[in-house]
Length: 163
Image 1 (spheres, one colour):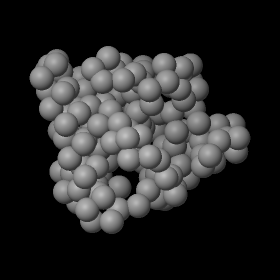
Image 2 (tube, one colour):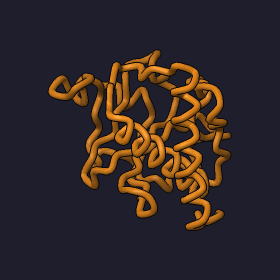
Image 3 (cartoon, helix red, strand yellow):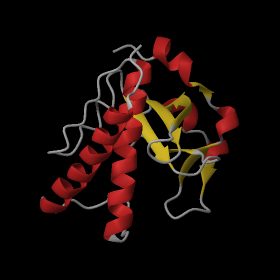
Image 4 (cartoon, one colour):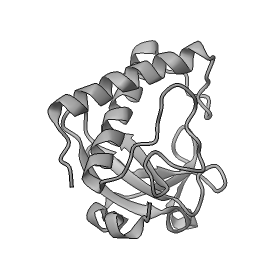
């Protein structure tokens, strides 16, 4: 499998900044109504893009984002219907929204840490994550929040998600 390079990570980080700019130019709105400061929005998009790049390299999957149009939710961030979820919180949980917003047949992968120090934590299929036991209403946008201890090791996603 190709290892992510430091240059590649920073290129992806810059790509995330460009993706953020393109979304703003086309009048894109956050689907849950998040209204961050411009700095928070850029930071989130840059780190998310770097996480997608790192995951794509380590899973040997093609990164599907173009950055010029919204991603197709039916395909995922990476080939094989893999959705990458990023948080800077080392102990963060995997957020998954109800189907059909987050398709039950997709694979959801948690990546934690800030660029360039990001780690793949684990994954879960949407239909497994979308269980009542994971539902959390004590957050800004209620959704399923899967603790890291309940995730499958990320290495097992290589065999499970067929491109």
